[in-house]
Length: 114
Length: 112
Image 1 (cartoon, helix red, strand yellow):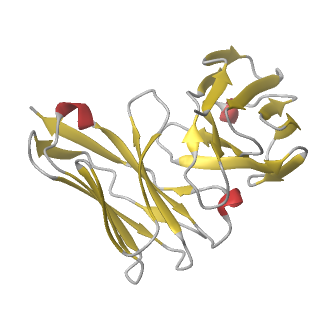
Image 2 (image 1 turned 180 degrees about the vertical axis):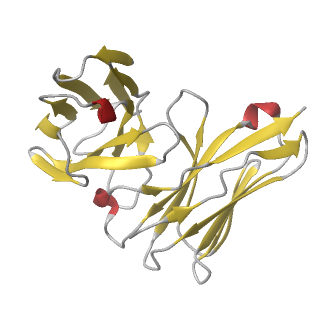
């Protein structure tokens, strides 16, 4: 069974610090990886996509992928109270299988303390 | 730009009643379309996906069904709702395989 694991938290980080969110996945053939932010009562919002090993930076966000370790992470620099949300890791489980939909982790609840 | 519309935003239905949730996408052609459900305390679960008109694949056997009568319209239905059907239903689209999925605002469904 394809699984995506995340620490549910809550993860508490002081304002201005770096928040580090982690995710592991079971399907070694996975090809694409996404981070979504979900505010309470709202739908998920895409914040990062990553497809190859290494780091990808977009503003205050950096996604890191290590396919050998089946590990993907999200770093949020200069954390702001508005970053407080649940962060969902999503994995496309098969090459060419995007139409199968994404497998989501249950999310990490991040709290940025002012 | 592309937009996705989903309605209604909230719905309260009695057990055994029918259901119809609708989703439409604007600004793109032949999108992949998806229905997910997010139950309280659980992750997002893929229910159905579609790669074209009339093409529906089901991921979870249950009393729900989906249809795609037009290129950019995706409908989730049930003939008789169960208590376990309560949850947050989300429609999503992507341009093609392996690309990010973008979600609508969702429908919060409560079954009484």
